[in-house]
Length: 429
Image 1 (cartoon, rainbow, N blue to C red):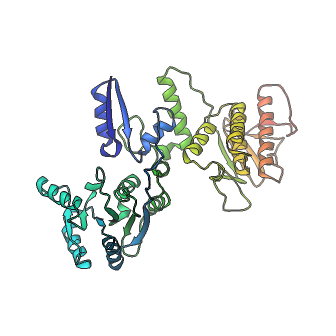
Image 2 (image 1 turned 90 degrees about the vertical axis):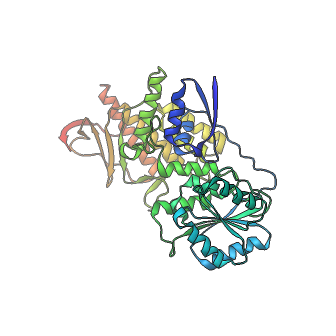
Image 3 (image 1 turned 135 degrees about the vertical axis):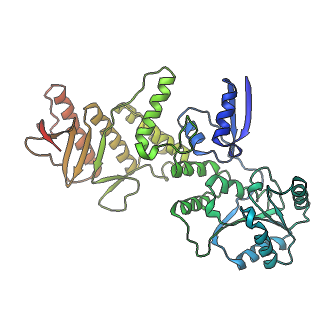
């Protein structure tokens, strides 16, 4: 058996697929500060083992991260602050074509600093000399590209300035920020935006995440956010981006579970998909006080990995007993279940009940409950039943009871739970 050790960020998808194709029995150990979304999701779904190291080195301090528009005076102050404590600075400009111009600009801003350039297109011997001089402290500011992203450990360099930080990915920014703060001194990372600070929405979300997750050992949480922003991609192929947004995340997870079960020779555990649209309930924090929110609060389950795992288990439940068991586990591990989580559990029970009743969709609009089976409306008499007004949790339970009535009638038992006698109407939408 062969074991291959690699750092994730240094290999692209094509490289990984080629390495795995060399031999059928290869154990792959991925070592990275921030797993890419594909690898992280493989771990969360149980297709790959995951082990994390959360203990930082002794006396290590988090890097203070600042996101600011490009400003020459700020750059000068940041460099002088580092030089005044006998430190060194990385100035990252990831464009070889204009790196000489930027270096001259830095020399003009801080004429007292010794400035050198380092990038991957330089002659090997010249680049080696520059890096050795920087390591020995003979260079104050290294104007460089992302060539420093991995393998650089210079304790005396404790300030990094990243030009056009909006052009970098989350994992790359995290790796670059990790080039400073390698000792006990406070380190600083300045993420420079274009003058005016205007960036694309997705770039703004990445920068917000990198500033939010600045604590030691936060790479895993940052990778979780990267998974949310980019999606998992095509887990079993070469494509970087899959089709999660096209098919919906729940359906994607279901298809993935079915494929994994098929490969393992197991029978897939799944329910028919049910579309549920409720005008009194949304997922996440509700901006409207008249609409309830169903979610797991961060204050209840603080760890991102545990919260994602809880969502995954809830989404894969196919029996009411599994939901109750999960609720009991939450109570035992995290305490009393808060209201948003209770709504999430009730919604899941409703989804399971509807799927078992053969219902395709459930919609509540203006208090009217409008279920469909095989494209046919299900009415009480000649009208849609009215959901009693009141608490969102009580309304979910009432709808679930009504669905159980539909299920009982479908099985020919004629049972009723008080939701009203229901018969199927041949009225198409």
